[in-house]
Length: 108
Image (cartoon, rainbow, N blue to C red; front, side, top):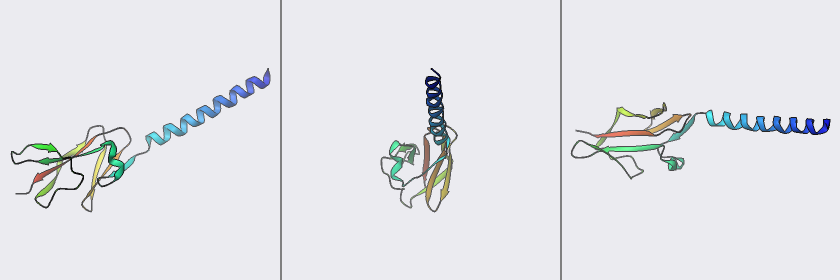
């Protein structure tokens, strides 16, 4: 009977260790670049200003032409993620499921 208790305790210990490792990996910040194929979950959406001055979500994965500039004030994430702008690229850092928007305004 003692052996059964020892086995049950070991199994529970192993389950707790696996759960701890899984939770730790979920809480690590994820960094995704705008040109990263891992953006397939639509973490990062590109919003382009149209001729009427309204923003529309772009279906294109490429940055807009030189006729547009990045609107840093309007760009951001819904659940606390941060955007970093480096070398004409946007990097998303988030620890939760988040949705981020990058806005491009017409360069007048």
